[in-house]
Image (cartoon, rainbow, N blue to C red; front, side):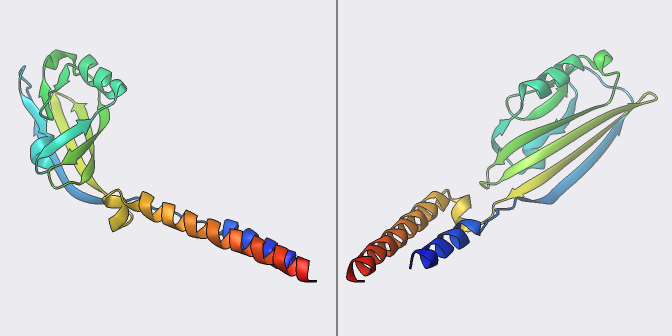
Length: 167
């Protein structure tokens, strides 16, 4: 019985469940301009994502933007603060939570090519693995599975002790 129990435990721990995160490209935009003025809007992520509730931008990306004369406002709009500082190409990623309760990863690439500035922006929707994970109820499912697993292992130990007493 103990060998059977060991095989069951090893096979249960041998299972691996992988929750994959997939990206579906929602929209891509490209704009090109020759002259930037202070205050010009480069990208409006609020419009690109269909309304934003909140966004996350790292301090590193903020410093990249500010060192290139760009400002990311509180309402998720990238504006030109000092266009003369934009001398090189840059790439930043910003996570946004849209009003339809979906997360997006927005990739913004700005290239400065021979007196012409090209701006690429893409918004990739982050798909949740399951409905329960999307609503935050995956932890309830994990807790129930853990309780059931503990009860089954406990019952197997109980049966093993009882059988060894009988024999």
